Length: 193
Image (cartoon, rainbow, N blue to C red; front, side):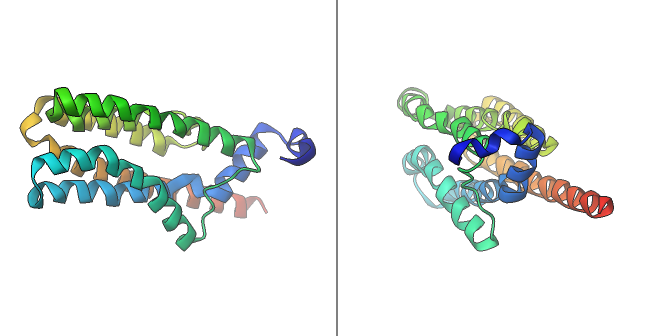
């Protein structure tokens, strides 16, 4: 931000501005729904070796597709004028460092890719509970992690279909919960006026 303009704003003001501008980042989750649904379907049409590779590198499509969905819906996901928007980007960035982990899992125990990817992807949503003041992100974190743990850890033979399908459902419910939170906030803001 220019010249410390944000210094006069409270943390609550910054959070509320970020929520209003980014709509709690729901287009990214919506993109995740689409990508993980594609992962589910790929298992039935592509060789498993290709599916495993697509899992590793296909995750990189979630962010640009989310930005595109955001643009279509008029939601700005690139809030660089708000320090909490920058924090949100910093929180998301470590996922790039997960790629070597995914590659090693692919090389050594590829049947555990859905387990590994689901747990690491799900856990990265935890800080958004606070950033966006959103219980929906608690649901997304726990739902994604437990789906990956249970379905990817105990039903390994079906993990490449069950885990992405479960994650798609969890993300979809997360989007619905976020929409509910945004609507409730809008109604309470209207009532105050």
